[in-house]
Image 1 (cartoon, rainbow, N blue to C red):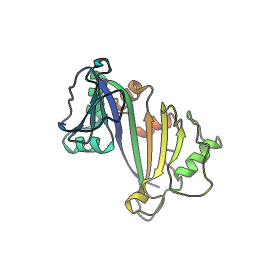
Image 2 (cartoon, rainbow, N blue to C red):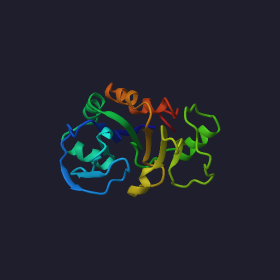
Image 3 (cartoon, rainbow, N blue to C red):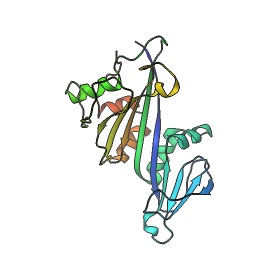
Amino acid sequence: MPYIVSHCVDYLAFTLNSPAVFFADKAHDFTPSPNRNYNMCELLESGALHMWHTIDQRVGHHYVYAGKPLGYLRQHGENDLQMVQWCLEKSRISRIDIALTSQPEDKNKTHGFTPHLLAWACRDLQLVSRLTPAKDITHMMKTETKYIGSHKSRNRLFRAYDKGIQTGHVPNFLIRYELETGKGTKTMARNIVSGEPFGAIMRRYVDFPANPT
């Protein structure tokens, strides 16, 4: 069954020695810092955060771009490869997430390989996985997010969930896969900049089918 697949960088956190962002973004307002390592926090126009410490300058200037701020930058002419390339060359990347969304071309069809079935297959060793499946996999077809990897370390965490439920589609029509990377971020960034398909990158860690039925 043919699928329509889209992908994007869904989270980008990086640190610079001095405040300098290539992206089309400007300071908007101050907001309390969510990270105790920084006592100042600036909210940018995109919704991203810029954090620093007024005394301990060794921590540098830390920027956090989640999904919506990255979407804002795309709307203003930036693209994922350029942003990741800039971060790779100019900064220390502490976290980078990629996301892939899949839906059948035929609007009357749905995915057969749901997030639950993916999690079950990894748990039961039916698929190769470099990550450890969560132990609390339910035996009911609910719509909550399924996790594979470590919540605690978050060095690498895979998520799969039914995004269509959030947007009014029928169950199992619009499936979202996300891979969070907190260790080996340079390697992940290089893979993205090289143009490697996001599905291929994800399948290095969770071997889900390229064309699920």
